Image: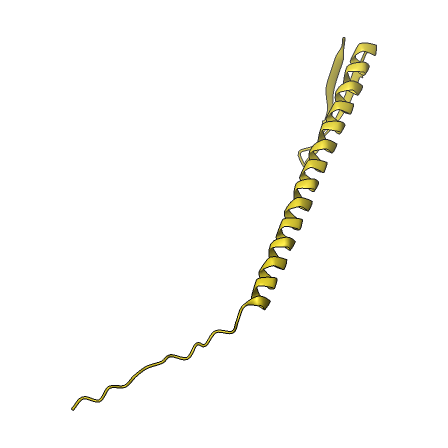
Length: 88
């Protein structure tokens, strides 16, 4: 297997132009690794998206329960009962 990477030009922004030369086995390896990388990234993105959906659903359920509890509560009397005692 042969894979040769040559930097042709370095750009000011830190990127570079490169030339890649390879034989048949090198091509097979690059394609295989590229496909595996794409599939791995796709799986991770879907797992993260699924976690986000589950978190959003839990948050919405929690909000719904909180608002339902707020409606069911009896009004409270915040007035203080204070007795004033007169000293003789």
